[in-house]
Length: 181
Image (cartoon, rainbow, N blue to C red; front, side, top):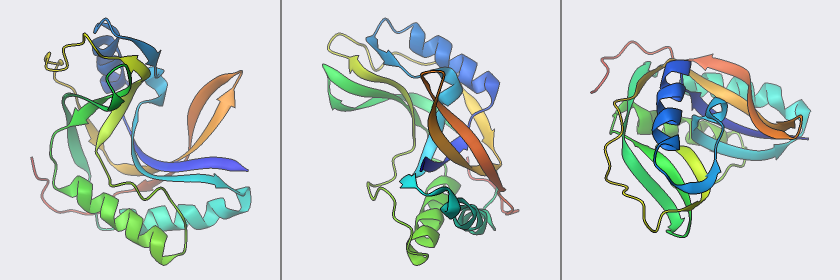
């Protein structure tokens, strides 16, 4: 069995900048290793390895016709309660992103693939179990932008006891449309 999700990768420069910003916030919590930073588009959960080729085909079908895009971090947010929150970096609105998420979810649904049905919220998880009771979530973050040119199928697994999100397939965004700011 494999724990799978489809997401968007960040380049190393963006990961490093976000890591430096997050670690300088003075917040207690379980910080996500920077190598695991990503934008989740669809969480699939446990799958048999034999299902991976079908999911790869579906990711490729969803990516087809969608243009590459540049995403920009636009502040901080959180899910949950202030004393036990999931802290995340918000992304600025980018018209192609929700369209890509909708296409991916539609393709998965039409193929009978199950996934977490929570509404899509564009974010990058920075910390879990974070205590934000005294945090200034309005503090400006350094400008961080990154180019997205693929949908990535990830395998969430433990490597030497550490949770890692390993890319196992990338589907190129093939559209040529004009990118919205």
